Image (tube, rainbow, N blue to C red; front, top):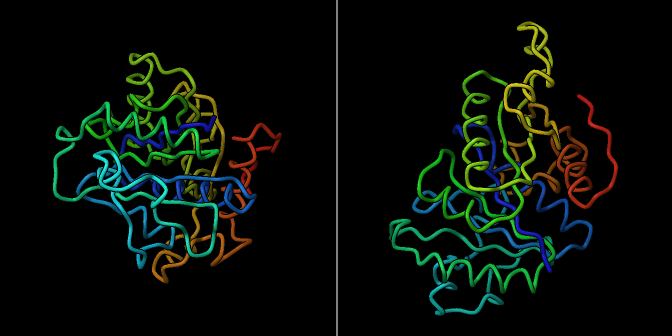
Length: 246
């Protein structure tokens, strides 16, 4: 049975969606069957980070309501084992039947090795839809104080929901800036109270790849962010990969 992750962040601008796309692509590189679901209802962007903005994609609501089978989820043009469902645009989150959503994900777990729900930043209705359905969580934060505070709050809410398997990704890390403000990744971990699964350095290739509608791991295979995504994907699978600021 496949593993179901929600990718969350407390604050916008942390690069959560890029992280989601990067990890999913890294797993697909290894031949894993992966489904990405954009849960940002009304403001979908995951297709851009995946390099699928030119692909016609079903919304997850189309599948939930039975208009199309899950097998017709859009296939990535470069990763044959990576599929994608976009977010619906013309409805409210509260109009999405939660039981139908869960039913779709139960089926997905039978057909895919990994399912990633890319939830919008914050703790609104779409956050709760994704968080209630998932059993594993990747919480993405930047190293700045506002992002860390919001990540800590998300961690607290997940704990109140009875969710236990929460791991922290510190994204868009500028080593020079950390040194100037005398901050460490350990400080971020202490302030959120969460175990670390990865650190991703600030990397202009993330923006460039999206601008050229390419998945980052194809656009710049050896850039710092791509290396970090691959290491996180390995850790998710249970392999030992040291965490370093490189």
